[in-house]
Image (cartoon, rainbow, N blue to C red; front, side):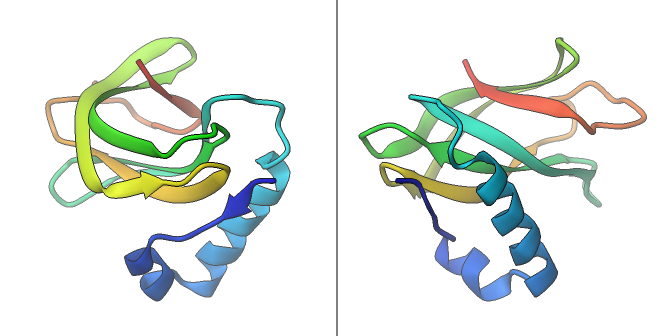
Length: 125
C-alpha cells in the first residue's frame, strides 16, 4: 500500500492549502496500476532567477529506495521536450511504496522558453 510522506523541510514549511492539494493528488493517483516510478504534476513556475520549477508528487511504486544520482529527467509538453537536466540530489531518498512531493529546478538555459509550462510530463530517461 502506498503512503504519502513529506521530506522534513517540506513538512515544516508547507502551507495547509498546499498540503491539502498534495493529499488530494495523492488520493487520486495512489492506486494507479504502476510498477515503477510515476510523477504526478502539482505546479510549474518560473522563479526570480528565471529557473523553471517543476513540482511533482513522486510515486515510488517499486520495492526499492528511489534515489536521484546522475539521474536524467525530461520535462515535455504534448510530446515536445521542454527541459532536460541531470540531477544529483543526495537529500532525496524515497522509500519503497512511498509518494513524496519535490520541486525539480531547471536552471535558465536548460529549458525552452514558452508562454506556459502547464500540463507537462516529467519522466526519468
